[in-house]
Length: 293
Image 1 (cartoon, rainbow, N blue to C red):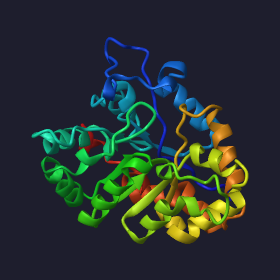
Image 2 (cartoon, rainbow, N blue to C red):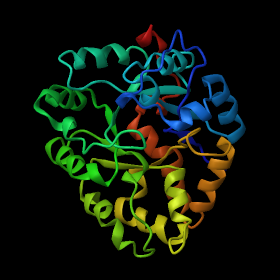
Image 3 (cartoon, rainbow, N blue to C red):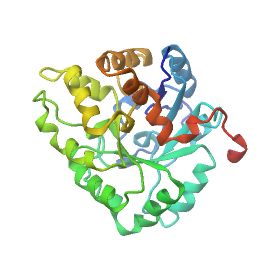
Image 4 (cartoon, helix red, strand yellow):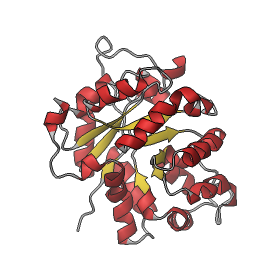
Protein backbone atom coordinates (compact mmCIF):
# COMPACT_ATOMS: atom_id res chain seq x y z
CA UNK A 1 0.00 0.00 0.00
CA UNK A 2 1.31 3.44 -0.92
CA UNK A 3 2.10 5.52 2.14
CA UNK A 4 0.42 8.88 2.48
CA UNK A 5 2.89 11.77 2.27
CA UNK A 6 2.38 15.23 3.75
CA UNK A 7 4.94 17.96 3.09
CA UNK A 8 5.25 20.33 6.07
CA UNK A 9 8.07 22.53 4.73
CA UNK A 10 7.54 23.83 1.16
CA UNK A 11 7.92 27.48 0.16
CA UNK A 12 6.38 29.48 -2.68
CA UNK A 13 7.28 32.82 -4.28
CA UNK A 14 5.02 35.01 -6.42
CA UNK A 15 6.25 36.74 -9.60
CA UNK A 16 3.84 39.59 -8.83
CA UNK A 17 6.06 41.90 -6.80
CA UNK A 18 3.52 44.72 -6.91
CA UNK A 19 0.88 42.67 -5.12
CA UNK A 20 3.40 40.76 -2.99
CA UNK A 21 6.45 43.02 -2.45
CA UNK A 22 9.69 41.66 -1.05
CA UNK A 23 10.50 42.72 2.51
CA UNK A 24 12.78 40.02 3.99
CA UNK A 25 13.48 39.73 7.69
CA UNK A 26 16.85 41.27 8.45
CA UNK A 27 16.83 43.03 5.07
CA UNK A 28 18.57 40.14 3.28
CA UNK A 29 16.67 37.98 0.84
CA UNK A 30 17.46 34.27 0.75
CA UNK A 31 19.44 33.09 -2.29
CA UNK A 32 17.06 30.27 -3.15
CA UNK A 33 14.05 32.61 -3.37
CA UNK A 34 15.82 34.62 -6.07
CA UNK A 35 17.36 31.66 -7.90
CA UNK A 36 14.50 29.12 -7.74
CA UNK A 37 11.24 31.06 -7.17
CA UNK A 38 8.52 28.42 -7.58
CA UNK A 39 4.93 29.64 -7.61
CA UNK A 40 2.02 27.92 -5.89
CA UNK A 41 0.85 26.51 -9.22
CA UNK A 42 4.30 25.08 -9.93
CA UNK A 43 4.44 23.55 -6.47
CA UNK A 44 1.08 21.82 -7.03
CA UNK A 45 2.44 20.28 -10.24
CA UNK A 46 5.54 19.09 -8.39
CA UNK A 47 3.58 17.63 -5.47
CA UNK A 48 1.27 15.69 -7.75
CA UNK A 49 4.24 14.27 -9.66
CA UNK A 50 5.88 13.32 -6.35
CA UNK A 51 2.78 11.63 -4.91
CA UNK A 52 2.29 14.13 -2.08
CA UNK A 53 -1.26 14.29 -0.76
CA UNK A 54 -1.26 17.49 1.31
CA UNK A 55 1.04 20.27 2.48
CA UNK A 56 1.53 22.79 5.26
CA UNK A 57 2.81 25.72 3.24
CA UNK A 58 5.56 27.58 5.10
CA UNK A 59 5.54 31.31 4.48
CA UNK A 60 8.94 32.60 3.32
CA UNK A 61 9.91 35.16 5.94
CA UNK A 62 13.28 35.64 4.20
CA UNK A 63 11.29 36.95 1.23
CA UNK A 64 8.18 38.62 2.63
CA UNK A 65 8.92 39.32 6.28
CA UNK A 66 5.68 39.24 8.26
CA UNK A 67 3.36 39.65 5.26
CA UNK A 68 1.87 36.19 4.79
CA UNK A 69 -0.47 37.27 1.99
CA UNK A 70 0.87 35.11 -0.84
CA UNK A 71 0.92 31.92 1.21
CA UNK A 72 -2.55 32.71 2.60
CA UNK A 73 -4.04 33.54 -0.80
CA UNK A 74 -2.62 30.28 -2.10
CA UNK A 75 -3.66 27.84 0.63
CA UNK A 76 -7.17 29.29 0.77
CA UNK A 77 -7.67 28.09 -2.79
CA UNK A 78 -7.86 24.50 -1.54
CA UNK A 79 -8.22 24.17 2.22
CA UNK A 80 -8.75 20.42 2.00
CA UNK A 81 -5.17 19.96 0.78
CA UNK A 82 -3.29 22.93 2.22
CA UNK A 83 -2.81 24.81 5.45
CA UNK A 84 -0.40 27.64 6.19
CA UNK A 85 2.45 28.09 8.63
CA UNK A 86 2.86 31.84 8.97
CA UNK A 87 5.27 34.30 10.57
CA UNK A 88 4.11 37.03 12.95
CA UNK A 89 5.94 39.63 15.03
CA UNK A 90 5.17 38.02 18.38
CA UNK A 91 6.52 41.02 20.31
CA UNK A 92 3.99 43.40 18.78
CA UNK A 93 1.20 44.59 21.12
CA UNK A 94 -1.47 43.30 18.72
CA UNK A 95 0.25 39.96 17.96
CA UNK A 96 -2.58 37.80 19.32
CA UNK A 97 -5.16 39.66 17.25
CA UNK A 98 -2.97 39.41 14.16
CA UNK A 99 -2.61 35.65 14.64
CA UNK A 100 -6.37 35.28 14.87
CA UNK A 101 -6.76 37.29 11.66
CA UNK A 102 -4.36 34.95 9.83
CA UNK A 103 -6.14 31.93 11.30
CA UNK A 104 -9.17 32.99 9.32
CA UNK A 105 -6.96 32.73 6.24
CA UNK A 106 -5.66 29.21 6.59
CA UNK A 107 -3.10 29.60 9.37
CA UNK A 108 -2.57 26.29 11.18
CA UNK A 109 0.88 26.97 12.61
CA UNK A 110 3.21 29.77 13.64
CA UNK A 111 6.86 29.95 12.57
CA UNK A 112 9.61 31.90 14.31
CA UNK A 113 12.86 32.58 12.44
CA UNK A 114 15.78 32.89 14.83
CA UNK A 115 18.84 31.81 12.86
CA UNK A 116 19.49 30.64 9.32
CA UNK A 117 21.39 31.57 6.20
CA UNK A 118 20.33 35.23 6.27
CA UNK A 119 19.77 35.91 9.97
CA UNK A 120 21.87 34.88 12.97
CA UNK A 121 20.45 35.57 16.42
CA UNK A 122 20.27 33.45 19.55
CA UNK A 123 16.51 33.96 19.48
CA UNK A 124 16.35 35.52 22.93
CA UNK A 125 13.60 37.79 21.59
CA UNK A 126 11.33 34.73 21.31
CA UNK A 127 11.04 34.52 25.08
CA UNK A 128 10.98 38.22 26.00
CA UNK A 129 8.13 39.22 28.37
CA UNK A 130 6.20 40.97 25.63
CA UNK A 131 5.85 37.63 23.82
CA UNK A 132 4.21 35.83 26.75
CA UNK A 133 0.62 36.57 25.59
CA UNK A 134 1.38 34.84 22.28
CA UNK A 135 2.77 31.74 23.96
CA UNK A 136 -0.25 31.58 26.23
CA UNK A 137 -2.49 31.96 23.18
CA UNK A 138 -0.66 29.14 21.38
CA UNK A 139 -1.43 26.90 24.34
CA UNK A 140 -5.09 27.99 24.39
CA UNK A 141 -5.68 27.31 20.68
CA UNK A 142 -3.37 24.28 20.46
CA UNK A 143 -1.29 25.76 17.64
CA UNK A 144 2.11 24.26 16.79
CA UNK A 145 5.08 26.63 16.73
CA UNK A 146 7.92 25.92 14.29
CA UNK A 147 11.31 27.36 15.18
CA UNK A 148 14.08 27.89 12.66
CA UNK A 149 17.44 28.09 14.40
CA UNK A 150 20.91 26.62 14.62
CA UNK A 151 22.98 25.51 17.61
CA UNK A 152 23.22 29.16 18.70
CA UNK A 153 19.50 29.19 19.53
CA UNK A 154 19.04 25.80 21.20
CA UNK A 155 19.38 27.18 24.76
CA UNK A 156 16.42 29.47 24.07
CA UNK A 157 14.45 26.60 22.58
CA UNK A 158 15.11 24.69 25.79
CA UNK A 159 13.77 27.61 27.86
CA UNK A 160 10.61 27.74 25.74
CA UNK A 161 10.06 24.00 26.15
CA UNK A 162 10.44 24.29 29.90
CA UNK A 163 8.23 27.37 30.26
CA UNK A 164 5.46 26.20 27.92
CA UNK A 165 5.20 22.39 28.09
CA UNK A 166 1.65 22.54 26.73
CA UNK A 167 2.81 24.12 23.42
CA UNK A 168 4.02 21.78 20.69
CA UNK A 169 7.32 22.99 19.22
CA UNK A 170 8.76 21.64 15.98
CA UNK A 171 12.41 22.33 15.24
CA UNK A 172 13.18 23.03 11.58
CA UNK A 173 15.96 20.89 10.09
CA UNK A 174 16.51 19.26 13.51
CA UNK A 175 18.30 22.46 14.52
CA UNK A 176 21.08 21.53 12.05
CA UNK A 177 22.93 19.01 14.23
CA UNK A 178 26.60 18.12 13.81
CA UNK A 179 26.81 14.60 12.35
CA UNK A 180 30.42 14.79 11.18
CA UNK A 181 31.68 12.29 13.76
CA UNK A 182 29.39 9.49 12.60
CA UNK A 183 27.74 6.91 14.84
CA UNK A 184 26.93 7.13 17.71
CA UNK A 185 26.80 10.87 16.91
CA UNK A 186 28.22 12.25 20.13
CA UNK A 187 28.63 15.69 18.55
CA UNK A 188 24.87 15.87 18.14
CA UNK A 189 24.57 15.84 21.95
CA UNK A 190 22.55 19.12 22.05
CA UNK A 191 19.87 17.41 19.96
CA UNK A 192 19.77 14.28 22.11
CA UNK A 193 19.61 16.42 25.25
CA UNK A 194 16.30 17.97 24.13
CA UNK A 195 14.63 14.60 23.56
CA UNK A 196 13.39 14.62 27.18
CA UNK A 197 10.79 17.24 26.28
CA UNK A 198 7.63 15.49 25.13
CA UNK A 199 6.40 18.67 23.45
CA UNK A 200 9.41 18.87 21.11
CA UNK A 201 9.01 17.56 17.56
CA UNK A 202 11.63 17.46 14.81
CA UNK A 203 11.29 18.37 11.15
CA UNK A 204 13.38 16.11 8.91
CA UNK A 205 14.30 17.81 5.64
CA UNK A 206 16.75 17.19 2.79
CA UNK A 207 19.30 19.20 4.79
CA UNK A 208 19.20 16.34 7.30
CA UNK A 209 19.41 13.73 4.53
CA UNK A 210 22.48 15.45 3.06
CA UNK A 211 24.24 15.48 6.45
CA UNK A 212 23.40 11.83 7.05
CA UNK A 213 24.88 10.84 3.69
CA UNK A 214 28.29 12.41 4.31
CA UNK A 215 30.72 9.82 5.66
CA UNK A 216 31.33 8.77 8.35
CA UNK A 217 27.61 9.44 8.94
CA UNK A 218 25.16 7.09 7.23
CA UNK A 219 21.36 7.10 7.02
CA UNK A 220 21.31 3.50 8.28
CA UNK A 221 22.95 4.55 11.56
CA UNK A 222 21.51 8.03 12.02
CA UNK A 223 17.77 7.62 11.44
CA UNK A 224 17.33 4.56 13.67
CA UNK A 225 19.18 6.54 16.38
CA UNK A 226 16.84 9.49 15.82
CA UNK A 227 13.77 7.26 16.13
CA UNK A 228 15.21 5.62 19.24
CA UNK A 229 15.77 8.98 20.94
CA UNK A 230 12.55 10.75 19.93
CA UNK A 231 10.12 8.16 18.61
CA UNK A 232 8.75 8.32 15.08
CA UNK A 233 5.58 9.98 16.36
CA UNK A 234 7.65 13.11 17.08
CA UNK A 235 9.31 13.21 13.66
CA UNK A 236 7.84 14.68 10.47
CA UNK A 237 9.12 15.18 6.94
CA UNK A 238 9.29 18.48 5.07
CA UNK A 239 10.72 19.00 1.58
CA UNK A 240 12.35 22.42 2.01
CA UNK A 241 11.45 22.76 -1.67
CA UNK A 242 12.66 24.69 -3.60
CA UNK A 243 15.44 25.79 -1.24
CA UNK A 244 17.03 22.37 -1.75
CA UNK A 245 18.13 21.48 -5.27
CA UNK A 246 16.23 18.88 -7.27
CA UNK A 247 12.64 18.18 -8.13
CA UNK A 248 10.17 17.47 -5.38
CA UNK A 249 10.11 13.83 -6.51
CA UNK A 250 13.92 13.73 -6.17
CA UNK A 251 13.60 14.90 -2.56
CA UNK A 252 10.91 12.32 -1.77
CA UNK A 253 13.08 9.61 -3.32
CA UNK A 254 16.02 10.72 -1.19
CA UNK A 255 13.83 10.38 1.88
CA UNK A 256 12.77 6.89 0.89
CA UNK A 257 16.43 5.87 0.58
CA UNK A 258 17.33 7.39 3.93
CA UNK A 259 14.35 5.81 5.73
CA UNK A 260 14.91 2.38 4.18
CA UNK A 261 15.98 0.70 7.43
CA UNK A 262 13.02 2.03 9.45
CA UNK A 263 9.88 0.01 10.03
CA UNK A 264 6.80 0.59 7.92
CA UNK A 265 5.01 2.03 10.96
CA UNK A 266 7.84 4.47 11.65
CA UNK A 267 7.93 5.58 8.03
CA UNK A 268 4.16 6.11 8.04
CA UNK A 269 4.46 8.37 11.09
CA UNK A 270 7.28 10.41 9.59
CA UNK A 271 5.71 10.79 6.17
CA UNK A 272 2.23 11.78 7.40
CA UNK A 273 1.09 10.65 10.85
CA UNK A 274 3.04 13.20 12.88
CA UNK A 275 2.05 15.99 10.48
CA UNK A 276 -1.61 15.18 11.05
CA UNK A 277 -1.04 15.44 14.80
CA UNK A 278 0.77 18.77 14.54
CA UNK A 279 -1.68 20.21 11.99
CA UNK A 280 -4.97 18.38 12.72
CA UNK A 281 -6.77 20.21 9.93
CA UNK A 282 -4.85 17.96 7.53
CA UNK A 283 -6.22 14.82 9.22
CA UNK A 284 -9.82 15.74 8.43
CA UNK A 285 -11.42 14.25 5.35
CA UNK A 286 -13.08 17.59 4.70
CA UNK A 287 -12.07 21.04 5.81
CA UNK A 288 -14.76 23.53 6.81
CA UNK A 289 -14.07 26.34 4.38
CA UNK A 290 -16.78 28.46 5.93
CA UNK A 291 -14.50 29.08 8.89
CA UNK A 292 -12.12 30.87 6.56
CA UNK A 293 -14.68 32.80 4.53
